[in-house]
Length: 309
Image (cartoon, rainbow, N blue to C red; front, side):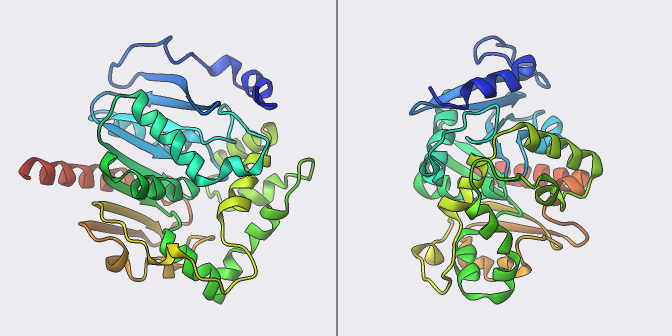
C-alpha cells in the first residue's frame, strides 16, 4: 500500500467512481476509473466512443487541462485523459525513481490495454508530451499518430539544455524543483504564475495546495537534464517516424523557440506545425477554439490518409 493512497482517496472521494461502476459509452458521458500497473493505480476519465485518443497533461496541471478539447473530440473518439502517477487522484509513490518516464509509459500502455485498443492516437503537453514520445518510441506498433502541445521535443531538449545558454536560463526553475524535499514550502504561486487564465490558475493553485508535491518534483529529478551541462545524450539523435501535429505557443515561458528548429530532421512522417503567436506554455487553453479546430482538422486528415492506404 502506498503511503499517499489514503490521502488520495479522501481528497477525491466525492468525485470518484470505480472503473466498472459506469458502463455507459454514450457520447458526452464521462466515465472514471483506475488502471493498475505494477502496483501503481492511474486514474483516468474517458468520454465518448470510437477509436482511442489519449491526452496526457503536464506540470503544474492535471487531467482537467483538456476540458476545452474533450467535448468536440469525443464526438468521434474515446478520449481518455489520465492523471499521471504523482498527481492525485492517481497514486503518489514515495520513491523518486518511480517517476522515471519508462514507468509512466508502462502506465499508459496499461491504459491502452484496458480499453482494448490495438492502435491509439497519443497527445501530450509538457512532461505528458515527453511521456507520449517515449511511448511512441518504445511501442511504435501501438501508435497511429502523435500530438505535441508545447512539449519538450526530446532530441531538442537533450541538446538545448546542455548547450544553449538561453534555454539553460529558461530551465533554471528546474534546478529548484530537483532540490525540493518533502516538507519544503510548495511555492504554489510561483509554480502557477504562467497560467494566464486567472480562474484556471486559482484551480491549479488549490490543487497543488491540497496535493502532495514530492512525486511531481521527482519527474524533474529523474528525467530533466541537470547540471553540469555540456553532456551529450543518445536522445539527441532520436527521430519520430509518426504522423504528427505540433501546437506551439511562441511565448512559451519554459521552452524557447529553438525547440522548433530542425523539425524535418526529427519528425520523419507527415507533420503539421501550428504556432500561436500571442500565447504561452498553454496555447491550447489560451486559444482553445483554434487549438481544437487544428486538432480536429489534423485528425480528419490522418483518417483520410489511413483510409486511402
